[in-house]
Image (cartoon, rainbow, N blue to C red; front, side, top):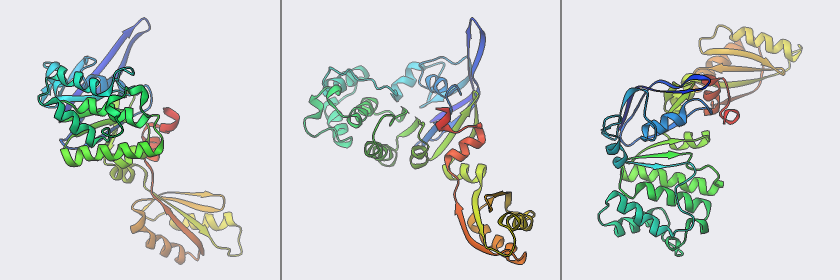
Length: 322
């Protein structure tokens, strides 16, 4: 659905030339939900604007929804939907009129039936919602209207820029369900940006992380967490006549050569291990400690989060970088 090779964009100003995007390669398959993450200034917005034809690339090639981005930008626009972060509705115009205008602009046949269908599916068909302007809607309703506007012409590919920013948790969860249905029921490909890592984890089949104008990591949420961070095992040690720090040091020495242990750190008298495939490694770790005469009080394992992944590949938390 999207194939980009060497996509680049430079800007020239009074202070010289800035390489905002530096040779991005990315692929998005039909029917995927793909999350595009990156700190501010990393090239995320510039890449999104290029893929949606809002900004011409300086170099590189891309095919978007079966059309050449540089040779046929109008063809790309006919086959994509784009929902901007700030929305695109006129706050004074009734929602149905907005949808009718969008349908006319795209030459949609059977526009009334299509609008009714979208209203049902996006829960905009009750309480006279389509007769209201967006200014009289809740934040979640306005966002669903934005998505309806992006879908009215039945595009196979939908771009969502920060789709749930500013929504309350209930509205966010509701919108997630609608996005899942687009993929599962219609086979719509969704390319979304978000600053919410729980959102990317819950929604996305694959994630791309961009930093300093280049893709620095990609894969499914599970693959990224497994590949970049490892599992964290915290070992609480029992009393054995020595100080907690001495016991922890002895435990660290016992595990130093274990093949699954990437890192062992003594922290407040406990041992914090970063290990490959924690579930599979636990019994071996326990045996090694037992053979070294180290008594265990408790053992906890935590899966890494996407924030751990982001911190590893960019050197900063997405919350701090947003």
